[in-house]
Image (cartoon, rainbow, N blue to C red; front, side):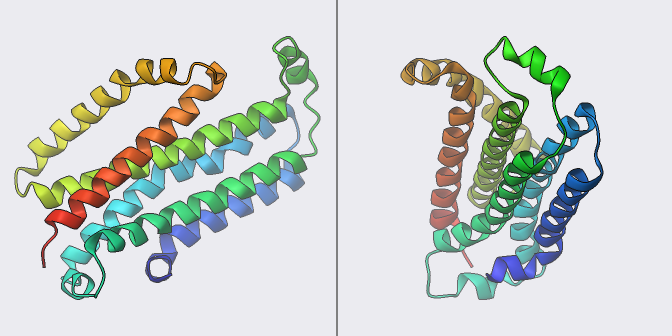
Length: 220
């Protein structure tokens, strides 16, 4: 609650903006193209903004020198990191829920798009649900990358540009390196859902790595 209260401008602004956009979609948008575009837009914005908000919540503590008070609390450092991570995730889940509900409430009839998707055994609303779920997985993935970066910065001090560049390269390498083995591991799962599950799994693994590094190496 503390994290949500302190960063209500970011998390609340994104959430309220997404909800207002869906009200606009439900009441004003006409035509398939507009509905298809706007239905996934709020979650896409979430995926882009919330990881930066998470990293900023940590860096803000150090810049304001409030991390001394934070780390002196009678809880493990990893618990503090968990609380900070849950704040943007809560906003993401809220926006995802609104997005998912909005898809079923959209009054636009997807006639042309529906005819194109019939041959694949899908409906426009099913595709929108899939896209929104993939966006939520992307949020979890990017939050994990941001959390792991926070842990790395607590482990390696100095040389920020070099360490950051190596971190980005390593993250991309690991993500694509393990994608094919993961696909074989979950061979019974429909292939269309494998990227979604993989993004969730990779993001949570990076999140755990970030918690461990932060808990072990963060000092007052």
